[in-house]
Image (spheres, rainbow, N blue to C red):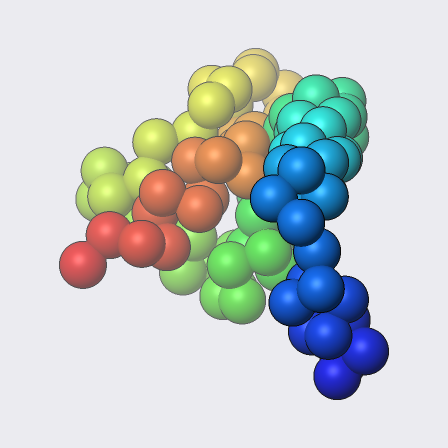
Length: 92
């Protein structure tokens, strides 16, 4: 860690711009990854939030969280995006 800090201190402004540009490019590539936009099942969403499926279903029933995909006939779960779950976690 100390080596990384020393390298940053010794960097010129142009070096820092290149480092930041590279990190931004990595972040953008990660966000465009199809797996990051994949919808999660109720079970996966509950695990992601660290709660039980029953608690997640009670939040859905109360309207505190809205699934990204409605429950389909013959299926027992909703689908949720990580973005929806992240917004739910930051609500007061």
